[in-house]
Image: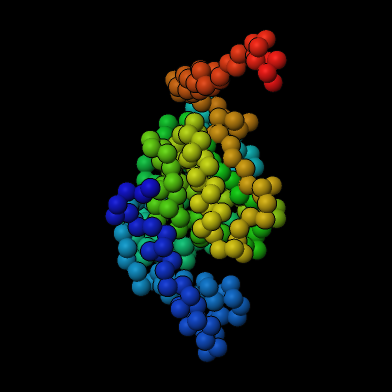
Length: 268
């Protein structure tokens, strides 16, 4: 459960149906489809709201240059640019969202919305034990899907389903040939309840037309399982320690079932 007083997704999306009716007014020159009507209604609503967010959020852009090489310290700081954006309210979010040309982001480039203090780098000290859910979304619905995932993040809807001790780091969008890869990052990949809860809240909170059509369209992965992952030595020790603890816990959880006695076998 989210902490009392945190804004939840319903506070950010309430009133959509009535606003959609007004947005469908034929006199509106910019509305020509149900999807655009919903987008216009959402824009009208958010422009009038000033709810503060629980955290400060910042935006990063990763150009992913073709000749990009990993630095000796194991990160991609050279191509990761923090944009001049600071989101502290719904109004801030909408100004940012309205001015990010998602359609102009090129192949293998990425944009991230992360909590202040977190960086969208697997090996970052705050992310290194974490993982992410990734959703493969058609480009035709990618922007709308991305908008909802960002709203779930800043409204604490994602944070609210995490196991105690876990935290949301941020969300990201990466462009591929015919799809967008939209990801949700959290800090502790050892917490299965967090992993399950994140998937459930996404699948139940998204509008029906945006929901993934099957499990082939989403997957979960620990950051340390990516082929390009390389932790600094001092942090690799932390990962190894966590892995040993998980293996020990799994071994202790196994119940040794004794073989049935001769009498028990004869009663069966």
